[in-house]
Amino acid sequence: MTNIVQNAEAVLERLVDPILGVDFKTAKMIRAVDLQADGMLNVTLRLGYPARVEGGKRAAEAEAALSAAGIKAVVKVEQEIIAHKVQGTLKVLPGVKNIIAVASGKGGVGKSTVAANLALALMHEGANVGILDADIYGPSQPTMLGVHEAPDSKDGKTMEPVESLGLQVNSIGFLVKEDDPMIWRGPMAAGALQQLLKLTNWRDLDYLVVDMPPGTGDIQLTLAQTVPVTGALMVTTPQDIALIDAKKGLRMFQKVGVPILGIVENMSVFVCPCCGKATPIFGEGGADNMSREYGVPVLGRLPIDPNVRQAADAGIPRVAQAPESASAQIFREMALRAAGAVALLGKDYSAKMPPVRPLERK
Ligand code: ADP
Image 1 (cartoon, rainbow, N blue to C red):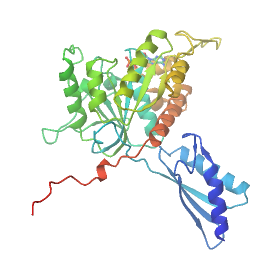
Image 2 (image 1 turned 60 degrees about the vertical axis):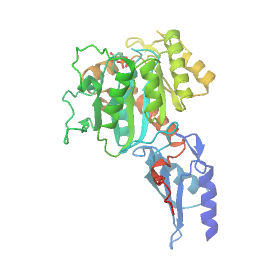
Image 3 (image 1 turned 120 degrees about the vertical axis):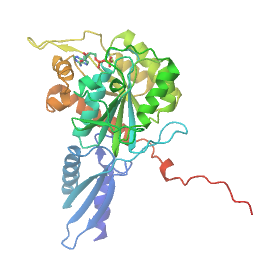
């Protein structure tokens, strides 16, 4: 009888998870394989990434593989997104398991659009998600997510995140007037962003997406060194001048020990709505070259899509507005790949470490 369990385990261990790109054994996905009195197997799989949609697919794949091996089984899938370790000696924030920094070398490449849609896509796939708009040069999340009221404070010291479209949101844009120029110097801006991050009462987030200020200057470097980031995602267009800056950004994160989850190529092509012809307005192949050069994956390629722009301007990004539309599906695949890359990173143990106490003198 135990042979059935062993055979089933052998079948399951060889299956490859399409989001992670590794087998179930390597990904430690097999939680339990139990033989019931009626000869049926109960299998439990654990997914370290959002499982609302993917869970059913993994269960069906596992049941089909077992059935092909002559084993009848019922496969259950559990979602377990854990906190992963962050750079250097920094500690994971309370209430936030993983921080995903969305960065770009240059402004105007669609970083904020990607950040908003990434956050919504992670939520759509089943995660508890927040977004922090740290783009001091142009905080656009309040507009993109359709929220304009400032966050509430219950104790006069900390802030409650604003809820919008199911996300917990805070933005530097809530704290300054829309037409106020940002004339903070580096340390001041980085300090303000740190406070915004730490003084917000984030509640039980699997992922906090941080829309970073574009560029690789003082502020960005300070943030990359002091915000406990699980992984960073670089947004670029295929254009050479955007890529040069994106590479600088990538190297900046690598230097401070933040893993790069991948590259998102935005505005890859323009597909003519009349004839369907795809024109690579900003050039071709840039993200692929960068991917080869630095050994990081391309998580997604988004076309120039007027619907993406209109949806963001209307305060309901494309993933929330039309989750099944072509661009939303690209965002959702991209989000799953990013979450998969996070799932493969090392676990955070800092929360479990006992506090260090001075030794008592005898
Ligand atoms: P960044 O944060 O890099 O400065 P934004 O996300 O604010 O860039 O995007 C700049 C402009 O481009 C916005 O008006 C946005 O709606 C638009 N945009 C971004 N990505 C796309 C896309 N794939 N298709 C069409 N418009 C886009």
